[in-house]
Every structure is written in C-alpha cells, then in structure tokens.
Length: 136
Length: 62
Image (cartoon, rainbow over all chains, first blue to last red; front, side, top):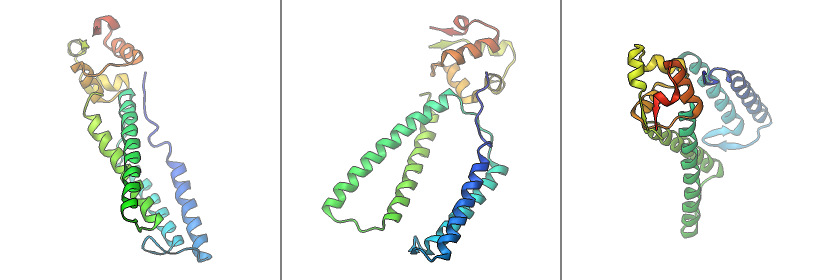
C-alpha cells in the first residue's frame, strides 16, 4: 500500500560521484590540462570545486532534507513538468538558432552549457511547483 | 468525480495527514481527492476505500 520514495537511499553513489570528480580534478590539475575555465585557473580546479560542492550539498541534505513521499500524483506532475521542460529546450534552441543567424553569439561553449543546464533545472523546478498546486 | 472521503474520514476521526500516511500518499493528494479534482488510479482508490473500511463504489461516486 505504501508508495514511499527512495529518498536517502541514493546517497552513497552521490558521495562516489563527488569523490570521482575531485580525483579527476586533481589528475587534470596535476597535468595542467585546461586553463581559464569558467573563472577558475584550470578545469582541474573547477572540478575540485564542483566535487566539494556536491560533497557539501549531500552532507547538508542528510541533516536538513525532509522525507518526501512520491505518490502517483507527484509522478504525474513530474511527467508534465518534464514535458514542459522539453518544450522549453526546443523553443530555446530555436531562439538561439535564429538569434545566432541575426548576430553571431560569441560565448564559450562551457558557459553556454552551464547556463542551459541552470535554465533547464529552473524551468523544471518552477513548472513542478506550479503544477503541484493544481490537481493535474 | 465526487467522493465521500471527507465524510467517511470524519466518521473514523482521521485527519488528512493520517489518511495520507496510511495510504502512502501526500496530504495534498488527499485534499485534491476530497475536492474531486483528482482522478486516482484503481490501486489508490482501492487503498483509500480499504483504509476507510468501505467499498470503492461507496467512496467514489461516478
């Protein structure tokens, strides 16, 4: 009868991910691969930073994150939010193509992708929150 | 779709939170169910009816 989430169970792999990212950052930093990356001196430094942030976020979630139940309605809301987000990506890609045709967009690929990922996360989050307040 | 969840829940002196915990869903889902704004799956309808000690046809009015 219970439809509980897997919250709290997938923590181990997040710690592993943080560890892998940090080790990768150290390796890249050691071989001095990639310079001036997203405001960091090197790509290795950036990866170390990301790894530490993942580690910190997962650790903080352990203390502060509320146990949330995922039931059939929230799954449905998530499905709709995913569809809206997908539509956003398609529209955004179209706008970028047109804008690039009018005037060339000069932006580092890494920066563009980071903006895009932030945008996707934001759109999904906002859509989910809005639709969660409706019955769906 | 109309439901009689609120009525049966009141008879059992269950809060929305308690019913939600027993069924394994969020409280919001129970709220939407009571308001008739959400069509549950057969499984959820069965679970709610079971907790309320009624038949599905008594709880959910089609």
